[in-house]
Image (cartoon, one colour):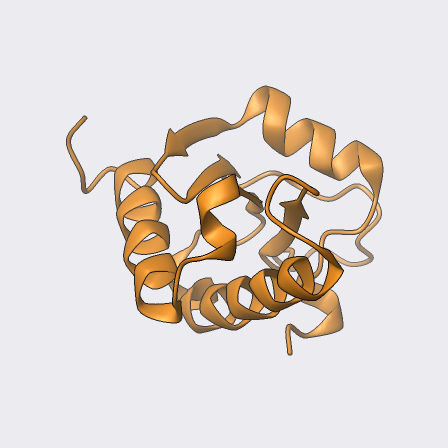
Length: 123
C-alpha cells in the first residue's frame, strides 16, 4: 500500500504533473514527472514528500483488471519513491496492454521510463 502522504489525490495536482512535467512513454505505460514541485498545502518548511497518482482507463480492461493494474503499479512506485526527488509529482498512466502484462513487464517499463525522466536514459 502506498502511504497516505505519498498519494496524489487532487485533480489540480494531476493536471500540474501532466501539463507541466516531463513525459516518458513505454509500451505498457506513460510516466509524467514534475520534479521538485513545492506543495503550497504542506505545512512547515521541510521538503514535501514525493507523491504519485495513477490513471487506468476502461481501455485497460474491466474493473477487476484495472484494480489489479493499479495495485501492481502502487506497489512498484512505493519501492522507487526514494529514487525520486523530494516534492516530485508522478502520474503513471496505464496503456491498454498493461492489463495483460505481468508484474515483471510493468516493473521493467516503469524503471525504463523513470530512468529516462531522471536523466539516466537515452531517447
